[in-house]
Image (cartoon, rainbow, N blue to C red; front, side, top):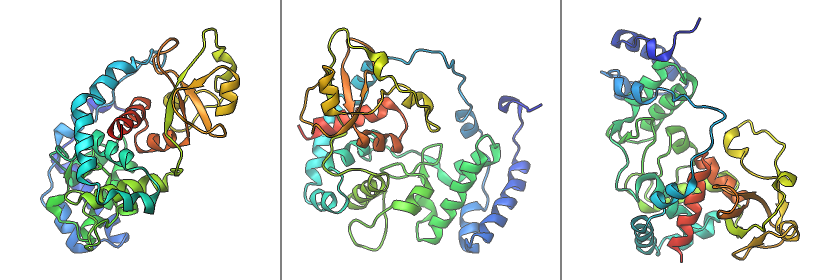
Length: 324
């Protein structure tokens, strides 16, 4: 019988034994002895990270909380004003990034705003210590051990050990990338030979843009538009029959895909411009009688960054406000 995570005992000696396994794997993957020593020497277990990682029990039949309070908190006047200032401050570099990657600057800035409030708070946890602790804990060992090895590879690629500070779960820099994401998509946006997502605005924006491009962003297509749903609309007729292997509770709330023209034929009226041949799903986050949205494939790209309907919606709405 498995021992509940809350009942397990995690010790420094057990942690150090586990790190020997990590060192062996790192060597096998070509990580230098310098990077291994820099990253793992003297590392101690972080019990606070284990506490933060305790899984929260949830009722699969529970009703999702309302979106409106979330929207008011995450698309508030201060975040909108900060986004507009950040966009203006980077207006000299955003157009070139948009041309190269095909992702609108306001989307990039909105992600930056949601992740670290435009760089004002990037987290204070030692990234390698957090990842090593989470991997040792074992609840999601495969994920966090992979990220731990990736963080050591970052040192081999020139990132200073002292730079690896971020969230308790290992996310780093302005865009809060995990180390494997930095290795995969981080960009040298200012051409100085480094991929500095902590201090360089150009590197930060180009790196977010590269992530979105790799996730399938379609240039010229909106993330979504608010829509009017007529009284008596038969929602059962467009209810999805698919079950997503990724984030099933998120995607279960989406309708079937239809073209905008087909939605219009059913009485749905987009409240902003969107091409009739665009494929979209209908989403009513707070149920019938509240604001509804027609959401495109680009909304799904935002979900790839953070698989939460409310996160993705608020990113899109903030982006719209930034360019208003």
